[in-house]
Every structure is written in C-alpha cells, then in structure tokens.
Image (cartoon, rainbow, N blue to C red; front, side):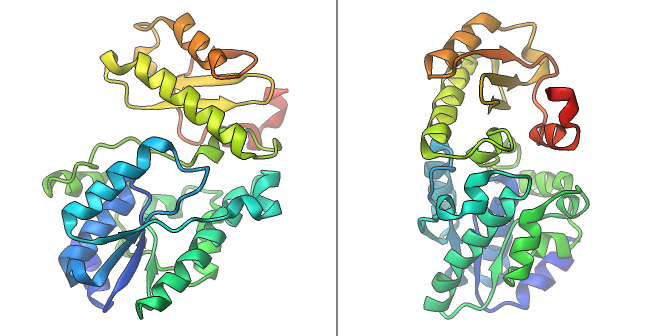
Length: 271
C-alpha cells in the first residue's frame, strides 16, 4: 500500500496538500515530500475561527521540519449560510470553501493537484458530506486511493519518526456545536477557551482527547474514559462554566469521535 501511495504521488509534478496538522494530512505531506521532493509540495493550513488555537504553531513547525513551504490562507466558511445554519451537511460548505480557497494558490504556483488527507477508513465511515464537496471540486485523495487505513497511517508515521503518529483526532471547533445551533465566532471562541481550560487541568494525567460540546443550554465535556474516575470532575465543570457556559456536565461514556452525529441519527434520545 505504501508502494501504491508512492506511485500515486509520483504521478504528480507538484501538489498542494490541505494540511490541518492532524495525523492523516501530516503523513500525506511527509509522503509527498519524500516522493516528489519538498520543493514541489506546498502545505496549506486554512485560518478561520473554527481552527483550534493550539493547532497552528505545531503545523507550521512540522512543515518547516520537512522543508515544505507552509501557507496559511484565511477561509470564510462563516460567510456561507449553509455553514452557519449548522445542519447535518455543514461540513460540505466548509470543505467547499477550503478547496475553492486553495485553488487560486495552486494556480499561482502552476500546480494542478490539491490533495486532502482522506483515508480508506473515512471512505466507509458513513455520512461525510465534506468528502463529497472536495471530490466535486477536483481534490484528490492519495491515501484513500492507496487504501491506507488510519491504523496503517499511524504505524508508518511512527516508523518514519513523525511527531504526529499518535496525535489524537482534532476536528474543527464547529464539530463541537450541536446541529441546529447557528455557528458564530463567539461560540467557537468559547468552546476553544473551555477546551484549553480543561486540558490545562488534565495536563498531569496525560489526557489525549478532550472535547467540550456546545448543546445550547449546556456543555457536555468528553475526556478519555479511563480518566473519569481519576480526575476532579467538579473542577472540570467549574472551568467550563467559567468560560461562559450556563451549565456543564461530564459525559460518563467518555470521549467519542463524532458523538454529535449520534444526536443527528437519533434525535429523540436527546430531547
């Protein structure tokens, strides 16, 4: 599968990688730099209110370490009604904005390929409107094409010595806002502050995953399940309330990637 990835990348003269800083896009960036040379690769990290504050600096450092040019174009998904409305297809409008923003950058450098970090697991994960939006706009998916799974990406990243090999999933801040609540920069900033506050209180525990979900009238705090019995839960609740939420509670099921989709699929459980 790595041979298939290399062969796919060698078909490209140059490429712009949509680089969020996560494990998948970091691996793709490193693989592209290895296959066609760092001078032929551009890493593009979109800047918007939905990017967690803590993500940007490590992304720039990672790209610099590969010798890859790193650009940080602003995106304006907040200007799209479909994105602000925050229905189940929100990610479609976000990815559309991203690819349409990266296209002029690719054109400027004479690059014909824009690649995303979509992997083989993403392709079978069910409801992923963002993947459709990127495909419709001509973005390519070398990891998916080579049938590389998340586990294989992490394993190879580890063997390559990439610092992102064990990096927890870090979806955009908008994924923390319950569907149906209109997204605003203020709501995203509140979630960002609350998550940073929780992380700071869990620093001694080696926490990997932290999410503060905005449910409108309260916040749901998700942390690694094995930590639930070790931490001062009230201190975490107080930290989140201090950032502007009217109420908060710890989810006893612990962190679950994409847990907001549970509410989309079975809304009657959450009324």
